[in-house]
Amino acid sequence: METLWESRYAQRTQRMGSSAIRELLKLTEKPDIISFGGGMPAPDVFPVEDFAAACDRVLGEFGAQALQYGATDGYLPLREMIARHTGRYGIKITPDNILITSGSQQALDLIGKVFINPGDRILVEEPTYLGALQAWNAYGAEYVTVPMDENGMISEALEETLRAGPKFIYVLPNFQNPTGVTLSVERRQALIEMADRYGVPVIEDDPYGQLRYEGCHLPSVVTLDGQFRETGSAPYRGNVIYLSTFSKILSPGIRLAWVIAPQEVIRKLVQAKQGADLHTATFNQMVAYEVSRGGFLDRHVWMIRRVYQERRDAMLEAMEDFFPEETSWTHPQGGLFLWSTMPKGMNSKKVLEKAIEQKVAFVPGESFYARGGGENTMRLNFSFAKPEIIRLGIERLGKVIKEQLQVKSLH
Ligand SMILES: Cc1ncc(COP(=O)(O)O)c(C=O)c1O
Image (tube, rainbow, N blue to C red; front, side):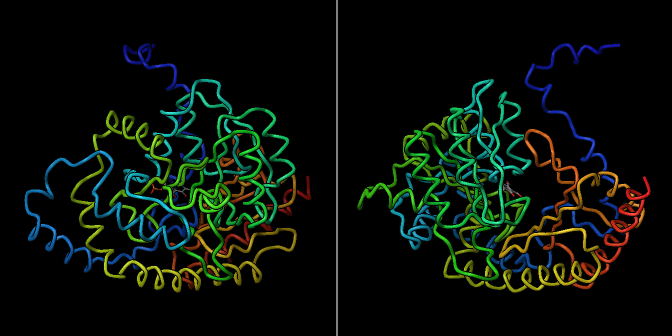
């Protein structure tokens, strides 16, 4: 029988349902399972003592101010620090181009709130970040997708899809979640030129850009867009909204991220954020600023890179040793994930069921496809487990995939 509540849920909740995959992944939270499923940073890189000292300093120096309501756009010294830091890469922004959010996930939600009408088409990579789809489904988004290769979104396909008149383009240029693939600099350039030609804004989501383990830093799409417009010393007012976060370089639990955008867009997002949570926690912003300043964050990121590079290498080496030759996988230059593809006809949800029995888990790739597909793919996280555990987990998973390949060939 329908409950009182069921008849009262808004229409938008119909697309919020919890997926079968999420139910499966709940099983992977048990301590004896080696999980490559989550997107979690390694807890051993969290700077716990530095946070303790920063909390003391914030309460000692600022006292009640740290416990008070704050401005919606965020703690000014933190925004100034982000503006300085971003400026190093060749883009002119001021604190007025920055909004502090409660994680990039909130920024995605606010973007949905500000830009998406029901039925609007959003252009996304195929596959793309599941959390963005979750945020935008609630606003009634529809999706058009652009396939990727080892250099990211394919430019010719992008141009074709732009003709469908999408509301905006959502792109993850560095070590994409879920594939680990990086968009080449030529394609970044092509992207901003096409976006400009078709008059379509770009949302650049970049949580992993600083976590590069090999190769050279590539300019962000927002930086290239600023240069393309040659606005000289005026603050940025181009076509791109850029998102990044402290989650992967400091701590995800403090829920702290930032948006860089033209000031008019920031003002709109501020209005949307006021209705959502008034502002991001004052105390967390002050503590994150205290921890980060004086060069700590750069040193800390260096350390994280060393730890994650070792884990990525451990996973790649173990895959060479234990995965069947019918599978292929990406070699990400940074980030937290790699992506493996099994032969057509294999089903990674079935493989996951068997893998859980062998106490290893991953995320089936199809969850990252906005319009279906990817049944034979999987996302593997390499940041969370230690190298020896990664090797053991990949050995188990390799065995399961080999068995499933045999089952398939028998049918
Ligand atoms: C591409 C992407 N965007 C946004 C987020 C959300 O990050 P946050 O912890 O800042 O909310 C994540 C988290 O994994 C992500 O991978």
